[in-house]
Length: 371
Image (cartoon, rainbow, N blue to C red; front, side, top):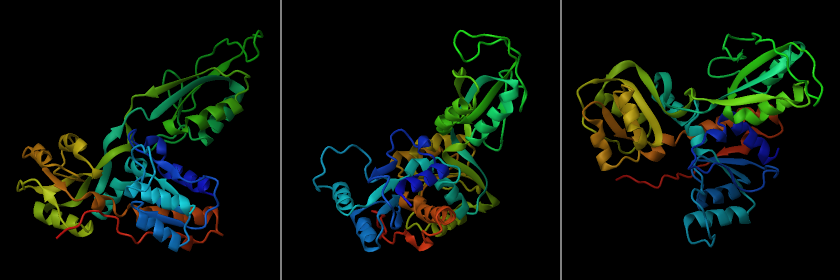
C-alpha cells in the first residue's frame, strides 16, 4: 500500500478542501507513491516523534497539527521545525497533516469532545457557507436516468441527511423532468428537434472534479452544456465548533469538574459562575476566541475552548460562562480516533497490512506543563 491510498482514506473522512485557508494540510513531506512500512499517528510532529517513528519502523507520520505552518525560507536546523523536517527527510519518513479539515468535520475534533462529555443533540456552531454547489444540464430523455445514476455514483445528490436528490430549475423535486426544449445537438452545425430533460443536481463542493468527469463521460453529446452555481446555504454538517446538550442539567461547578476529569486537563480557566444550571454547551477544540460571539448567540450556558486571552473572558457579559480547557487537552483524543479510523479502513482495503502496523505515538507533545 502506498501513501496516496492513505491520503484517499482521509479525503473520505475529512476532505482537505474544507480546511481553513490559513492552514497547511495534506502531505507536507515525502513522496505520495512511497510504499508504506508502518504508520505512526501523533498529535504534533516533533523531533522526538520522528525518533519514535524510526524506532518503530514507521515511514509515514500522520499528524493532527502540521509541522510546517508558515513559509520556510531556510532549512538549516536552527528551529525545532527545521530540525524535525531535516531528520524526517534524512530517514525517508513522510509527514501528513489533517488539522482544520478534521476540525470542520461533523465527526471531527468537536464531536470527539461532545462524545467524551456524553453530550447529545449535536449541531454545528458556525456552519460553513459556499460548500454546496448545483449543476444544471439538459439531456435527451432516454439518457436521463443513466446520467443521473452516474452523477449519484460520483457523489452528487447527497447533502446532509438527503440522498439521491435532483431538481429542475423550478425546484419541483426528485427525478422530475424539466421543460421540453429544441436544442442544438453536440455536433456543430447539425440541429434537429429533440425532447430533453433538464437535470439539476446538488453536490459537495470538494467533489466537483468527479461530478464534471462523470457528466462528460456519460452525456451523449460531444460538447456538453452545463451551468454550475455556488449555493449560499449553510452546510449543517461542516463548520467550526459544535453545540450540544447534557442529558440532564448540572450545576456549574459539577459540570466543570466533569470536564476536568474527562478531558484530563490540569487547569481550567473560566469566567465567573452565574448560579445557573448547565444544559446547553458550545465547544470548539483548539483556539476558539473567534467564536465567542457565536457561542453566546447560540444560547449556550457555557463555551469550552482554548487559547483565550485576559480580555476574552469579559466577553461573557454575565450571560454565560467561558472556559479555557487547554489547547492540547481539547484535541488530545483525536489521534486515538484517527488510529481507529485507519485500522478499519486499511483492514478492509489491504488485509495484508496488519493492524499492528498502525501505531499511536507515545510522545506527549503538549508544550504546556502545570504545577
